[in-house]
Amino acid sequence: MLSPLIALQATTVEALPEEAATTVEQLAVAAATSPAAESSLNLIDLVSKASWPVQAIMALLVIASLLSWVIIFRKFMVMRRAKREADQFEERFWSGAELTKLFAGSTERNRAVGGIEAIFESGFREFNRIRQRKGVDSRSQLEGAQRAMRATTSREIDGLEHNLEMLANIGSTSPYIGLVGTVFGIMVTMHTLHAASHQIGIKDVAPGISEALLATAMGLFVAIPAVWAYNRYATAVERMAVRYDAFAEEFSSILQRQSHLDET
Image (cartoon, rainbow, N blue to C red; front, side, top):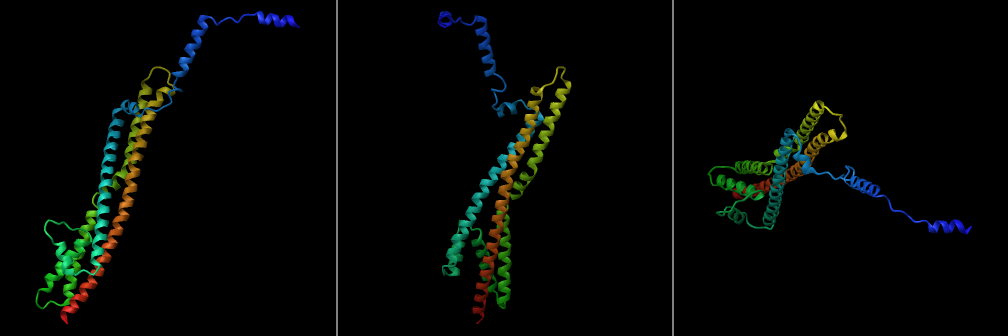
């Protein structure tokens, strides 16, 4: 029983031959540098190696994205300022201040008015102008003030809606522009593979398909923020339009009472 154990202890472990060790190291390096190990996607390299039609479409999508974001931030500032000015003027208007003092504050030099204050200024100006005429009844005074307020309301709403159509166009056309890039990428890939003389594998098809799909993804990334911003700001403009119309109706009632007092 002891003799086999003694024999095993006496046996020495020989090292691997030098050629076998070199082969193991080469296999480890090959596994580390294999395509499976390099699984990260380099978008910059993918764009730089894309065909020129796909690159042109990608550049167009980048320009559209920058333009849409500029409009989004500017429209955010415009809508926030319009809401803030409306809140401030309505607070002064319903606090019981005299209409003449409010009108004098709205017509100060070097002061641009907008929104509800501009509607008030135009309506009260026209009301005073018609009231100074002789023989004009209260109904004509009120109708003139209402026409002026409607015209000012239309101008204010048009200013709030400025560039919203550009957001709508970018949001609706960007996916189709991306699809055009996809079509060009696949066409160029198929043409290149058709002209190849060697056996075609997945590594030959992957770059072209990747650049084609990247164009589609870019189109969606451009369209989604533009569509979201358009829906948000279009709703905000509608709410401001309702607010402007409500103020014009309430101010018309005040002017109607004022005109009746002038007749008595």
